[in-house]
Image (cartoon, rainbow, N blue to C red; front, side):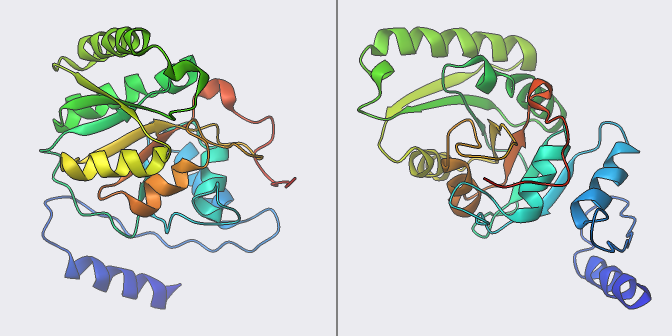
Length: 238
């Protein structure tokens, strides 16, 4: 633990260009029920309102997951988890944030979190809905435009920012979101996640992994409280 803490402090000195107070903490997960996920969740539980930020490769046990620890954290935490993928830059939050919606109440649960981050850090929110061309609800763009206009009005009220929106038709939802993020040089992508076992896990299906793996910016995933599992750990698989 001492060696690890010294290494961590040395690494922090390498990036000591930010005017923030960083407290390095090292904990040991002994295995069994005392897993890495359990230790992190216990730390977060003792600090209400905390946000977990971690690196992730955007791949894990299957195509639909974003990494084993990140996946388990999304199951046991109700707060947002920010994942920094391998292609992510380091944003200063001066550029827009993309908030993904899909027409469901579930996806709209991310709006208050997006508004809070917008108010705190300043990025201009913009809504994005990507519809697969053969989807049953892709036939009437008028209805989709009305939905996006309504959601942008709600997010504008919550964030005190003028909110634009974009509707796209694309077979690769994850790729379209990441391409849009690159086109507007986005600071952040915000989306809801189910955070439970089984497929599909995420509000946009397996494309959540593509968000993390391919996005040029961090991805903030929110699991609405009503999707909390009855027992987050130990984890079972199907």
